[in-house]
Length: 263
Image (tube, rainbow, N blue to C red):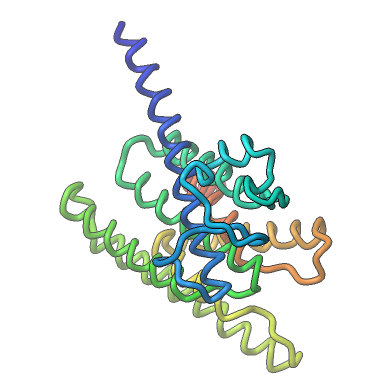
């Protein structure tokens, strides 16, 4: 009976993580779309981009509404892009991965919030080739909030985490900024956007300097892969950094331990 309860609770937790992840994905993609279009994400109801009809609650159920409507607007029949549904599935699976990796812990909550913000800024970067500062500021605020919560409830060494975070933020982002400025001066071309450097600065707090460096390496590899497989002439770097960050969060510790064990 105990094993059945444990299995049932695990399955329930995984299902709940997926459902909540898809809900937050729906919200954060809406924030990204409206931010890029210069609209308020606080006021105003969602509407069809073709006919302008305001959407009802049953039109906005993550994944389910898109499938039920066969990817078309209920009111005018226009085809609805599947990007939001892909984002909902992606974040749902990402949240499940975090639960499986970290269990029911403060780290899981922290990285769930970060993954949600990374999805939003990736969508915005894909649309506009810019990372809105609001996502960066929100990430820093979320880090501070979870760090404070860890110090209060979990008795984690806040000072050590803070120092590791600030070293990671300044070392990675600062080093990239210097290299970028030198490269831009020599070539006369922009090598790395300011939003990308700000993103690395924000991620440095979460990852520290060791995983921050690993994240940079993985981001470059993901960026090269995206450039090789995409039909777009210009590839935004934000999504590559976001994918690399998730990989680093899940696999960073074992990879670093393996690497250091070689010496």
